Amino acid sequence: MIIAVDGPAASGKGTLAAGLARHYGLPHLDTGLLYRAVGLAVRAAPGSTDFDREAVAAARRLDAAHLTDLDRLTGAEAGTLASRVAVIAEVRQALRQFQRDFARQPGGAVLDGRDIGTVICPEADVKLFIEADSKARMERRARQWEARGQLVDRYALYHQIEERDARDRANPHGGFFRAADAHLLDTTRLDIDAALRAAVAIVDGVLASKAASP
Ligand code: CDP
Image (tube, rainbow, N blue to C red; front, top):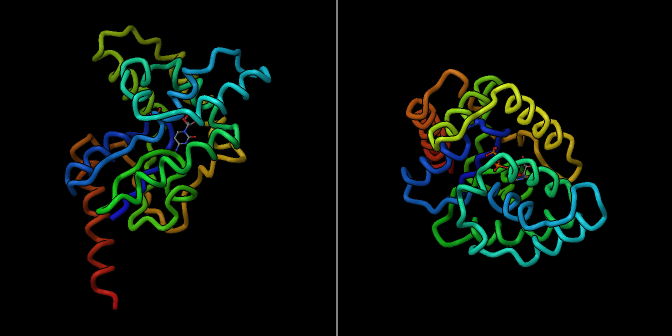
């Protein structure tokens, strides 16, 4: 079974995808980490021609060993750089096969990102599109970083998230939209446990209706 979980920045899709993976005994790939690792590997300044060239080269040589420094990968700098490299068509293309291979391993997988249900796995058995309002998403990300002992400027963080969302939604190569067959889950008023229960109910419902149809 392949489960695709898409949604905007800090919507809780990563936590939900990890919870679904545990619940159904499936491997999980946070595809944002791939874009974050590529972003951190580029030395040139965003906007320069060298930036694009280096990003494509970094995407082509990316492997699992680049995905281990989670503290750095999940920080603000990596998030902003990720959304810069994510608009480069050749970067997306270079990362596509890695994600597809992960999804199509025997038994299936859970993948979260922006374009899993639209581009990477349009054939996914279940697609979830996670939403939450901008303030709730900012507050979650702030608490996540504060739990690691970081000082957080909430005003700056809110604007960072809005700016990144705008770039992601406008990305002509991004495939970031709700697939017609994706189930919408708004987690604004749900804590982690309630959101996971709601997601499991959706997945179980889809599986039951597939089993019932000839
Ligand atoms: O955790 P958060 O939602 O803040 O971000 P992420 O999922 O780690 O993704 C970081 C950035 O990578 C996004 O803002 C997108 O620009 C890009 N991304 C993408 O374009 N496609 C994906 N499948 C995953 C991430």
